[in-house]
Amino acid sequence: MNLKVILKALWDRILGWALIACGLIAILIGWIGVSGTPFVYKQLPYVVSGGLLGIALIGIGATLLISADLRDEWRKLEQSEARF
Amino acid sequence: MSPLQSEPLPTVRWRPRGEPVLRREPESRGKNRVASRGRGATVGLSQPRGPWGLNDVLVAYAMNGIGAVGLLVSWWGVSGSVQSRSQLAWLNLGIGALVVLGVGNVVWLLVGRRRVGESIRRARDFWGTVSSTEFANIADDVDADAARLRADRQSGGAKALGATRYLAVKNASRFHREDCDLVIDKKTIAASPAVHLNAGRRPCEICKP
Image 1 (cartoon, chains in turn blue, brown):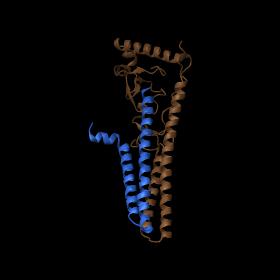
Image 2 (cartoon, chains in turn cyan, yellow; image 1 turned 30 degrees about the vertical axis):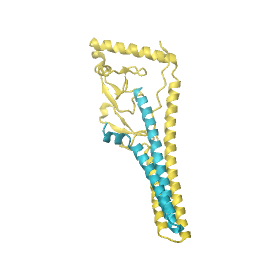
Image 3 (cartoon, chains in turn purple, yellow; image 1 turned 60 degrees about the horizontal axis):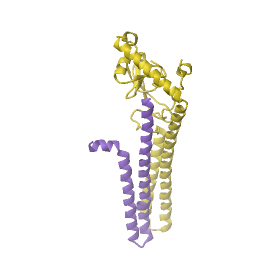
Image 4 (cartoon, each protein chain N blue to C red; image 1 turned 90 degrees about the horizontal axis):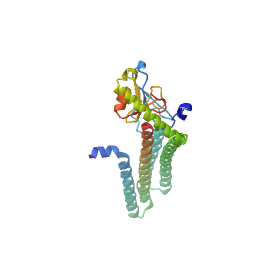
């Protein structure tokens, strides 16, 4: 099985994990930015771009992973019905 | 007479909803066309397979889009100000955008979970109505029909059945009459019984082709 087939079959899971990884990285960058300055007005942009965006990316990634499971379950039901 | 003959089996109604299917029209009406069943299933064949309809996809995209734009605007506003009061207002906007985005994703998952659950319940309801005795009778009838059709094929019995075309879903194990409920709204292959038998399919025990 080549890479193209794997990507086509598992795109949602791969994208989901990639988004979760990006979210964690964003949170890490946000934490580094916030801890690097004592000024609140400089910290808040990091809270938004790092913290909130990281949470959003993790949420979207998790949604994609759960959606992939639901889609698999749906496909199995459809195949069972077609086989009957 | 078997119980199957005296009391017809209930029609299968547990197809997952919201899935666009190819409906094969009678040959007199010509080409295939796209049909849809269930809520929100009004899209073409390019729709990704899953329990979601077009409306669900649009709602999810809209709420995620609003959330993403809200986060971007919030970041832009917070970065462009040095006053805490102004920054907190923009931060509130970002939190609100995050809530919108989260609600959109939760709704998406709940809709999918509900549709899959409905489909599973329909399957359970259907199989719960078929007793073990009926299963045994189904198996006997299927074996008898298959043997009869095989004998017909071997003895040139195609003259009786060969002109009639029966339908089967691709990769399915049974073939059906054109009016059988099990193939309505499905993409099917039309062929003679001999062809279906050669492909390893058995006659449907409900419509008894």
